[in-house]
Image (cartoon, rainbow over all chains, first blue to last red; front, side):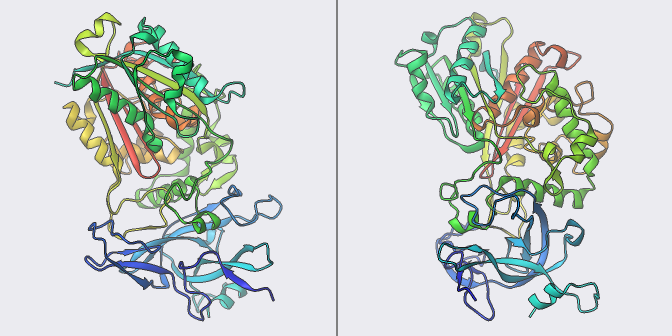
Amino acid sequence: MPNQTPVAEGIFTWPSADPHLIGSRCVNCGNHMFPVQSGCPRCTGNETETVELGTRGTLWTWTVQGFPPKAPPYAGPTDPARFQAFGVGYVELPGQVKVEARLTEADPQKLRIGMEMELVIVPLCTDDDGNDVMTFAFQPVVDPDDSTTSASSRNGAN
Amino acid sequence: MSDDVAIVGIGMHEFGRHDDLTGMEQGVIAVRRALADAGLSWEDMQFAFGGSNAAGAADTMVSSLGLTGLQFINVANGCATGGSSLFSVYNTIKSGVFDLGIAIGFDKHEKGAFRVNTKGAGLGDWYGANGLALTTQFFGMKINRYMHDFGITQNTLAKVSAKAFRNGADNPMAWRRKPLSEQEVLDSAMLSYPLTQYMFCSPGEGGVALILSRADKAHLYTDRPIFLKATVVRSRRFGSFEVLAPSIALEHNAGPTVDASKAAFEMAGIGPEDIDLAQLQDTEAGAEVMHMAENGFCEHGEQERMIQNGETEIGGRFPVNTDGGCLANGEPIGASGLRQVYENVLQLRGDAGVRQVPNQPKTAYTHVYGAPGISGVTILSR
């Protein structure tokens, strides 16, 4: 099995059995930010502390990236034969912030505003050394009463 | 009260793809056409503000236009580059420093969606690596939420595109001059749900130049001066939903377009009901819809009925994007905002030909929106 390396340090806790996104909280006004930053756009304060953000929230809006992004900066496959459309959305973490992320679901029929989402760490691409480059994404929360849930979703849901 | 500054000359190089011309050469051609329009020479220009996003420093064009020693200041302000140049020319004349000057915008972008320089935009490399550094995604997500909240339909988006390409077909300066049906728009490739290929504008090429003068001297250069009643640029405030944002606040702010619009109406001393036609940022079809309300021309959701009823057509109650907008003209960033003003000057002069808005419009409005959450508005009157 190839080694795993995060797409960047300091974005999410990794490796971890319980990964979280890493953000900032303003010491003055309590505003949450992602990723980490030193100043607060809400109160203009310049003292923040690093915090682990919540891992569940609701889908505030979404789209599906239907064509290969330009590389660079994109690190995933851009060859039309290998490119797969991917979902992108903002997930509202209660009491904190809306975070933009890839979604594990890319079917417009299966995405809806307001649905429950949870953080997962997924492979993005393979680097020059053969490592799996890992990144963060959100996946729909499996409803235990929903018999249509796919096996892959169940496996990803702890 | 604000009749202090007038537009006395306009020039444009055709938008589109021009493999044999640099972006700056297109800017130079636009300047020469503006000078010819005003009956002036380059030596008459006392000062200039100009800029491009990807086609070089504007002030180097003096090598082609003539080394007259004028004050030439480069402007780089993202999608509001043209609007910022115009703001600067306006205020330089209004302050009394100079009487006669020129705003210049031009650009030339590679094909396909904008390649975002993540470092230049203050974003980590991981953001681009993840496939999130695409302005197209923002527009897909903003209109998706807006359709959910206010009941705008995808057919209305297709109607906006079809109108743009119809108007573009009548515009000799436009890039896309082939009308497309609503069905063709809906059937084109889904780029960023719910937006299809023909609902998006493309990065392109072109140049625009506008010559401005003290209003009390405008008669020296033209018998049809168009007065710049307001020119405003605003950046985003906390809580607004903007392009290229790794996170957004839970608090909501209506965004820089609403701020710029309110400030412009205040400056001009008139309201949205007094505007006869508008050029509104239509990076994609949904942007035109949302910007109608953000600029104060209707309530959120009212656009569905207005567009279905044809009210934003050239012959409608409130014509929008009469030159085909960004959808038909493409978006050369540095020139795009000035292109809107160019079209409004044509319309107010009565020179818009087959695209002419009927009943001799008296007031016209422009609005630019873009990265990284910036908006520019102008109000013109004759």
